[in-house]
Image (tube, rainbow, N blue to C red):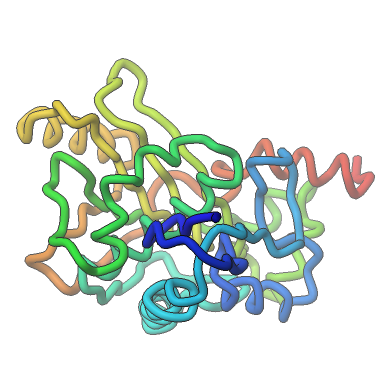
Length: 266
């Protein structure tokens, strides 16, 4: 019998959205063709990716509750819009549920391509809410706000993303990408990245033998690589983010070039 990727119980499995359904709904309401970048197929896509390895109890219970919390955080921050015009952001959060949700989204994505799914096994109980928050030298969460870009500085890629501007002079569209990265010269962690519109959530997942001091040094290097990135903690429930040096276009430059090839733009 197949087993649930979360609770490990045998039984009938259901389809779980890789990206929460409320984010798909937001994208579709814009009338745009593309939702975000799909790492597996290597292109921008508009379809709803799903994994079929979650039992109904987990899917309709704790995982649904985490998606509701993620929606609350993004909504209260004013992020659930097609074009975010601000250069700062007030982020109200509770650390444990936000980290649980971020891990859940990244874990779902990792199971579609087999990359790093093993990294999440030690965090499943935490995601389900049955274990305490992992220590900082196991995983932590940083938030970064991407900068908008002036439309007159990107005439070649004004479409298909330019429609989201609706008369505005700057563009910061709500595109979605769940991916991963690394830090040159530092192999102590895998950096999982959830890009949700202008909000970028960075999750360094450290190797089991990494000491707290070494993890702290790696976190500082991540912040140096992403100036403006703020580490979230359980001691705070509010941070103010300011747009960093990187724009959404910097994060999607390769993807935008591929979109232009797909749409036949010069």
